[in-house]
Image 1 (cartoon, helix red, strand yellow):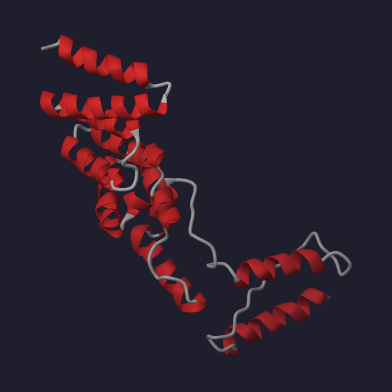
Image 2: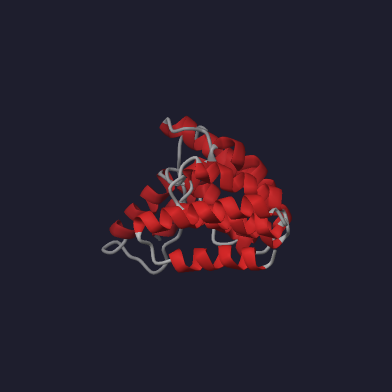
Length: 214
């Protein structure tokens, strides 16, 4: 049988193949000589280029089970050595890990990731909607200073966003800082008026509500 020969070859490779020789042995039990070419080519390419792409897993638990941040760092170091890419964790993988921590509602893991990724320009590389989402998660746990710090980083890139300044105003209102809340609501209103944005009325309501509660 063919399997006898391939099993023997696999045994030899296990014992004698040099570490630089990439190989993988799988049994494609549903295939035969006429059908095996396409699936074996696909499997071979996926094996050879297994760490070419960014690293994504579907849940926070799956990241943790794989080895967490240490494993992800090792993945990108190996990727860099093999393909000449940057050894730093990609912004896409950072986004994946942070978003999974929010979905899992694991604030401690989220906080750890933000501490790791924040100094590497993660927020500046993020889309505005994602930066707002991260800040809102800090707000959920009443970590207002962290939310404001995140908003400040986002403002360096999205300084013309009325939505961002309105969100900052909301945080200051939660902190009972009326002066800063007012100034940021007013800035959101000014940007929205100039751009004729549909959210203008909502921003004006926020400012009016703040003034009515004096």
